[in-house]
Image (cartoon, rainbow, N blue to C red; front, side, top):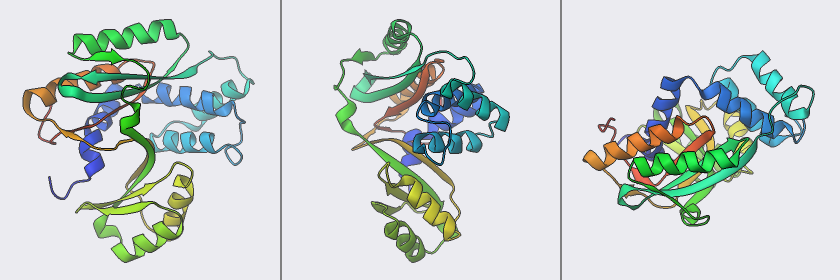
Length: 244
């Protein structure tokens, strides 16, 4: 679909589901707790800084953010969460990568296996699909908000890997280590950012439409509805016209 972000076509369902569920604050709070173990000052802890930015973008209250930081640094008591990644397949050979924060792996893995199997997929062994994704920063800028040459200069000078013209938007692609530097460079150049995140980008995509796409969206919705799940990445390209 010309004129729409390529990345938006891949991840469209996630944004809609997050807004619908209302669980996003508790999920981000877990991320903050994990990140704050490396120090409670975001100036010295890049991971915490990323997560606080995500929390602010989700309109998370400041006192909730600060409470989560204190849980991570040990100033307040809290549950001991750990990061876990699960890999699987959806119907049609679509690769699924699930990032979770859990306090009980013995609960999370069976829960995710059950969700996948009930929706025609299956849990795979470690390494089965992860190689099909690359961790990258994606910064989206509306095409009518900036001249392409100005965006190219600001982004590439700050260390961006690529700038893609997707019609209505530009996608600035960065490595995780240069993501924040590029984002700050765009802000300094007064270039308005529509959306941004560090995510698992599929190295290639599989077009999925019709009933298969509906089943995939249902599976993604079920996975994201699990309290332990932070993010679901996949390599399917789904038309915006498809809904659950």
